[in-house]
Length: 302
Image (cartoon, one colour):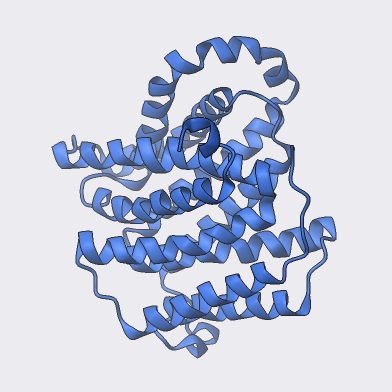
């Protein structure tokens, strides 16, 4: 498959995206041993801007008028991206990579609900049933198989932060419908530099509280993976997938993240896959597949 056909196939692009995102939960857990959460987020976006700048420069000059007219859209998208990452890396200090991977499947639910309430996008009864099933599956995972405890004890700190992170990324996904027509390198560079800028106050606070220790080689290898795959390639692939088949349908592919993420967490981190993970995973994935099968078609963008 050549690059031209790859960028025209949303199913391959979105599947690869979820593989990379599944690996991001594992990489984030590994990074938590060597990096502080806000510092790694800022470092991630700073190095991404440096890596992309030589390739994006010519396109930035060409798209500068569009950037000036629509700077507020780029700023809003960057805010969702930056806050998602800040929350996710914080969450991984308090919960497992498997939990984080499964919880990311709540994003399609948030996207569909937002599209329904904000844009009056129609939903079917079976779609609603599928979404409820997914929500229960997330609760089963986050409460270690005792979802009724959510109403008396709530969620643990890490899982709660991760669900907030998912809310921010759902907002980013919905916002992509207003993405200005610029080259993908322009888009990625602007999002990266804006996301880095947003993280600066968080890093300033974190360094003031905890100081900084230089990470070992392993820590830098982890961030290299995060920059190349979940940051650059996954964001490009996901944005293109949304462009080809729409936010609702593209959002459904996120249900693959818990599958790949759980598998990688077991293989790489040696985390234990317990019965409630299996039940939660089946309910989340099954619910999202049901919602996708009976989704009201959303017109793709050209």
